[in-house]
Amino acid sequence: MLRFENVGIRYGMGAEILRDVSFHLEPGSFHFLTGASGTGKTSLLKLMYMARRPSRGWITMFGQDLVHLPRTKLPEIRRRVGVVFQDFRLINHLSAFDNVALPLVIAGARRDDYREDVEELLTWVGLGERLDAKPPTLSGGEQQRVAIARAVVAKPDLLLADEPTGNVDPKIGQRLMRLFIELNKLGASVVIATHDDSLVRKIAAPVLSLENGTLIKRPSSAKGA
Amino acid sequence: MLMSLPQVTALANKIKDILNRKAGLQSKGTRIVPANDATNRPLLGVIAIMCYFAALAGESVLMINRAVDEWTSGLSSAITIQVRPVAGDTALSLDTQIGELLKIVRAAPGVTRVQELSRRDTEKLLEPWLGAGNILDELPIPRLIDVQIDRAHPPEMELLSLNISRIAPNAKLNDHAQWNDRILIFANFLRGLAFGILILTIITTITIVLFATRAGLTAKHEIVEVLHLTGAHDAFIAREFEKQFMSLGLRAGLLAIAAALLTFLLFSGLISRYANAEIYFLPTPDLYFSDFLLLLLIPLGAALVATLTTRVTVLRVIGRTL
Image (cartoon, rainbow over all chains, first blue to last red; front, side, top):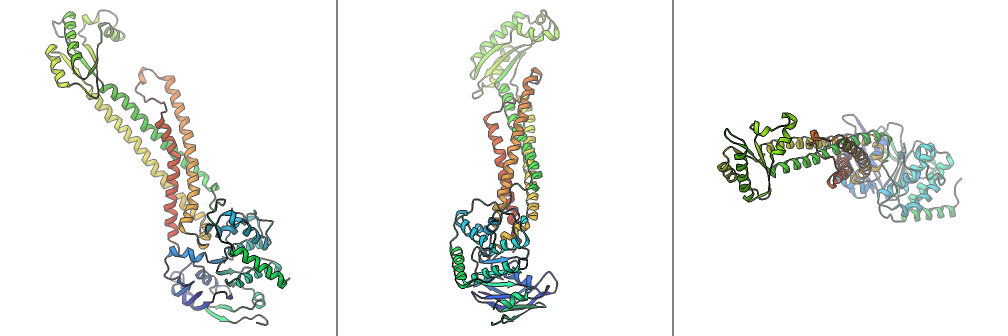
């Protein structure tokens, strides 16, 4: 479903941030992406959600060569990828409801068709009472939950989440992880970038670990994995 | 607290239900790029002012056209025959010449009406400058014949002039062509000037909207980025910005036509209050159907210019991204 072959990326004439990154994500797989700050996690995610093209190497996603695919074809691929950004990237003048509905609006859905779904999803992430709240009036944790709901609402084939439980209390964090797991059970591949070792230890999933710009694939470190 | 297995299954089914439902058609409720952004208010004012100038310039073109039509139609449908008395001419002999001339001119094809300016009328015209009295007998004042002609089928001027000079060698036919030409040159200059101002106004408005769109894109780059990464096509993003600027153009245009109408009412009031013989040449300030059509075109034109400029700018800027 997603394959990286000897991928490298550099910004301008600087040194390579990622070097010879190769891995393959099967459909329905679940991975953690770990690594200290500055090891290239964000750059790797950017390549995965097509915010950048690699400086070298090959990337294929859903059978398409992302390196050479014309940019006009990219939106269709992006619609199959849900992203939870570390800084949420919510649209401040839109309500929580409209922020979550955004991928469906972009896909051409009618409000009447998605209203129930969006309300249910927001209720599930604990924001059923705050459908009309604008992001600036929400706490960091609440904003994060809106961002997660937005990432999963269109049932993506690949979900990328950058520190998705970083701002929420453990109970909500667990509930959100359950959402990712359920999405994964429905066939979506999930990649969760995190610094939280305890999260990695709790869920039995292989780990993509970045060290100095190179990727090491490790088996799950969860107990009983 | 972890959920029990039945709870998890129920949840999984619920999520599956939600996520498996098919998306329908276009949303009508959400406005992704805000229309009433505070940063747009100065822009609304600037575009309204430009539209106001465009309305004034456009209206000036229409008014000048009407005034020129009035002037030139008055001049080109009339000719004047001037009969100058020469030494030895008496009033009686001049009257005889004029009587003959009237017969010839009336008989000429293309002439619709012939009227001699009577001695009494001529004296009356000159009275403010030369005083009352038997002026025509004392001074060699030319006698005038006003001839109205059919503009579509005018008389043969050279032939008419020849016939006139046979009867009265000192008679001169004036078809006002010289005045007509001068007025047309002046009118065309004014028309060109107003049209030039209109074109400059449109170009300035396009430039302002172009820079405003770029500034708007920079200010809203986060929205653009989210839309982009969520799978929006360039055309979708451009449409969202177009909606904002179309609404802005419409509102600015409506403000401008309100201000322009107020200006014309004031102008009309001034003309009707102070109109007299000295300013007869001023264009009529009445509003006709064409004026209302032009004013209606201003907000529509502003919206169209804003929409197209926004579309081109947004597509060009987004096109540089991946």
